Length: 192
Image (cartoon, rainbow, N blue to C red):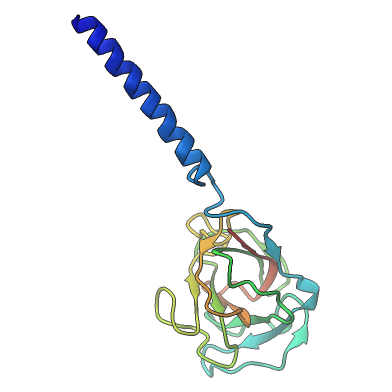
């Protein structure tokens, strides 16, 4: 009798386990993309403009067409602002993937690694571009260090979580390494 009771309990537990797994799969729990469906939105980089940004003066040069800064950075933490134009509404997306390349003073590409650059997603390119020391701020919904490096999530296909209350106006890439003189944006994709 004890054996029959144990078999019934085992059968009930097995059925509950199968139902639980089926529930997770149907509710999106099995998704590796981090959220609901929908097509990803990649920014058309042929429409962006860039400005050099000075860490010392916090000033921007006039925007020019392109995907990388025209003049080399003069010091560590200088950067390039990538200005967006004509973005579709991206406020419904929950993740962003941003990829870039780094170059030295001679134009030679520098390998991807930690401590090369940080990235800041910004709403108003005429406002605070740096945000708080770490994390998001009122004008900076995303700030991440080590873009392209082992510990930088934003440059992976999974990307970083972001909550957008409006469309961003651009991205600031700051050179964390004094050897980085040019930064070129190669991908900006909003996804879930």
